[in-house]
Length: 133
Image 1 (tube, rainbow, N blue to C red):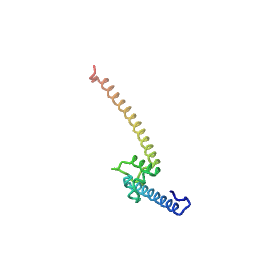
Image 2: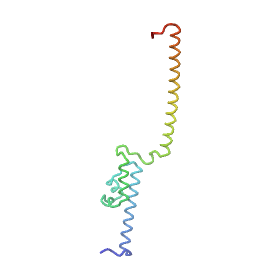
Image 3: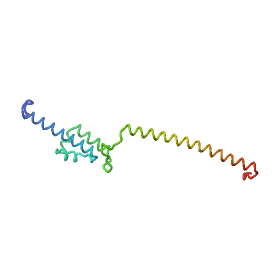
Image 4: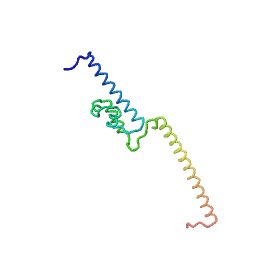
């Protein structure tokens, strides 16, 4: 038989549930911020809960699984050191500009080389030293 939803027992159970959820979410954030491996066991230990309880909470379970998928446990990067979308965009823009500069320089140098080789060949043919028959 379930207690009456308005009873003090039900209210205490609801408070305990919310307190446990907040501890689990806080533990998850702290592990992520520190760059520590995020697993059900590590979250349960940090929050003082059981792993089985974490599995019954869909939002917490999804967040743990998402963090596990996006991280390489050997090279976990703390949240404060991760690149933002804006910085990645800026780096990409700079790399594309540098690539265009190098392409332009390469084209210019190829033209210079072609002219120099053409001048060299014409000077050889004018002097009669052209090795080509």
